[in-house]
Image: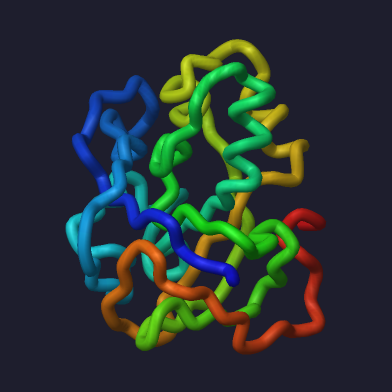
Length: 176
């Protein structure tokens, strides 16, 4: 069964030398039900909505299977939220998802895949990989995860089942 194993929201806004001056990449799992609206998870923040937010990038999903890959590659734990994701998933090939694909999460929430994540220097700095080719390495891995638009609002919590509702004839995000 495909499921959400963690829902993560910003723990703390942090200073960042990038153009925005602050980052909301520091996401951590929350306990209990979380409201999901047009701009994503309640209590989350998107410091740079031009590149990492707004309705078309309301949520970012990342698979535990891909986090396990990076844990082995980097020799360190990749806990939920470390990559700035809102949803840590298991049992669904998030990188094989197609733009326009829709998922039901739990009983109420419906999301639509809008695009792959495009890694940035803020992410490289956050990971301590700045100047080590992290952005290129992460992008070329085919394990970037998708951004999601919220089609139907509601409440979800860790353990919520993910059901694929529709799959359009479009390229997988790993191929974009």
